[in-house]
Length: 410
Image (cartoon, rainbow, N blue to C red; front, top):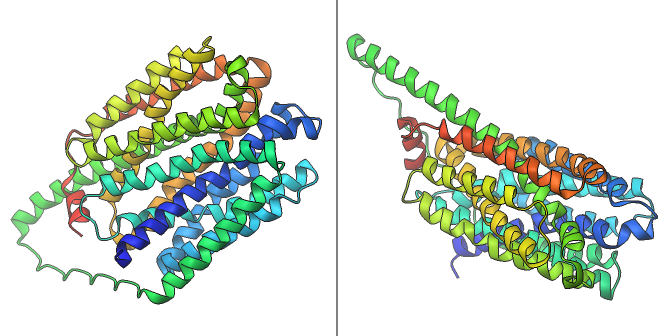
């Protein structure tokens, strides 16, 4: 295996672990901890909020450090830091201790997206499929969190669900450090030479063209941020709550924590491959058209979910997760095409601050909606959010501004 392929594999494993660790608590809280600590599900899950706040808040300093210091060094810190914090989380005896430990884990977990995603697309022209493959690994992490945590709960207790994955993560970090030491970092590309100033007449036309492009870029950035915020809320609400939804909706089909974990794993794992289809389409068709189709499917299937149980609930959950996971690579591809390499980590950090701020806000929302109305009302709200995403995407320009093409060429 070439060094570049091995590095890509490390980055994919990192994405898997990032989402895996951030959702261990979701399954622990839904299936066992609320009984052990004598709290309702709605009272317990807000203690996950500090972790998701850190997940978003520390993305920007992580991206800044990666651009100024070393992206590979930050990736090593991610692996080892998350693993150690997971092991410490297993020691929590109270909800406050749990919230503090999850916050520390969120600080290190925040490193991955503004650092790992730019490394995935570094030096590539076609970025849709690499981002999609990396996204599949992230969503397999989401899926495996429910499966492995449910298995650990039934066979070794919830604390083991934090300890053993933490040991594995530290081991991957040490292997990455070894790879880092053996493989030299690629040299930074030289900045293009400055062009000769043009004559006054043509310059006026160019200025008008640049002004038009600038307006288009601002419009695209604004739409990316709006859809990122709404998409983050949709992603968090579905991935965090699905184990509890299955616990309530699947009745006799879900007789143990392991079975609930299996159903969640199957839905998440199979739906994750929607990103490969979307990545393929993004490399060959308009991102706007692909995005419109994905957002429309989200709205339809969320609207169908209220009132469903057993096999019908399982089938529709699979359908809306296809659309939720399918959206993930679209914003990353758009942002990658809009930014140059030297600013890319910071640009992705800004996007993920918005994403994970929405994730953090979703936790108390899920608790409040579940406690007062149940999950049917949550799905109605998600259908509205998907419609707002659709309206925003329709306003994307039909053609990419010329400035983005230079970013691709770089």
